[in-house]
Image 1 (cartoon, rainbow, N blue to C red):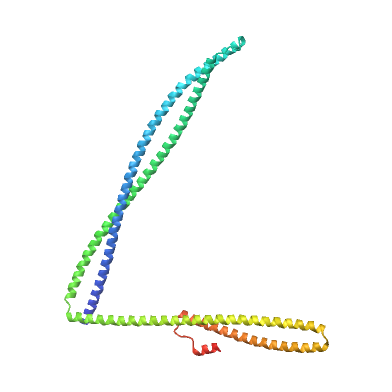
Image 2 (cartoon, rainbow, N blue to C red):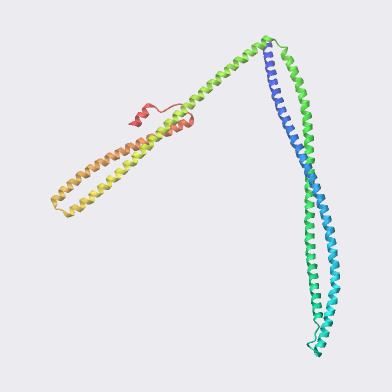
Length: 366
């Protein structure tokens, strides 16, 4: 009883040692994975921080650029307003002068139609041209102001999108920091578990060293014997596998031979059918020839020819019967070959170890 208890205890110790080793290996792997994950998270944090810094710098640049453009556009707008204010009185004066000149010209036209000053006409044309150019500049400036306002709105949208991306990046950094804190907690718990397992391992080793060396040697010899038995059993299984593979290869070769024989029988069957069809056509031709000759020759010639045709017909019928017998034998042989092929396929699929018997091969050859 004590020996059995000691053996059980030793087995339990070995199992516990193996479990501890496996557990330690798994924990080491998980620790390495956690370290790799921490490094990846740190690199992600660094990349996100760099991206956040770039976004902040880009946002500040966009704000400065937008402010500068807004100031520039305000100055241009003020200049255009002043130009428009200057153009309006000139336009009013030109209209008044044109009206006065038109009235004077109408009055003077009654007196003398050919007396008109060319300088006044030139001045009126220049005033109208200047007015038209100022109006065009004002419309172009308004279009430019609208374009700049649309660009400012687009820049404002970009700023909003960058702010949203910045908020998303900050949330991701918070998530990464939370993951890092969780990994740190896992590492602390793992370190505490490692300490506890190391203490248990040391105590188990001390208990194992206190056992009798003779019992250890007996246990080692027993384990070696079991190991040798397992090795022999493994060799036997490998030999069985090799033998089954050889049997499967032999069955596949026999199946291929039977397939070739089946193909040959099929070709012979087709040839016999073609020969039978040709003989039938020949019989029909002879019958037609007999009919033609019976209507043209006399009675003796008809009788002689009829007897000759009968003989030929009888010989052809005999040949036809022989061919039909051969055809039936070939069909029987083909059906038997197909049955053997199907049986070999069934045996090969189920992993059977039997081959084709000799009497079946002789029966197929007959």
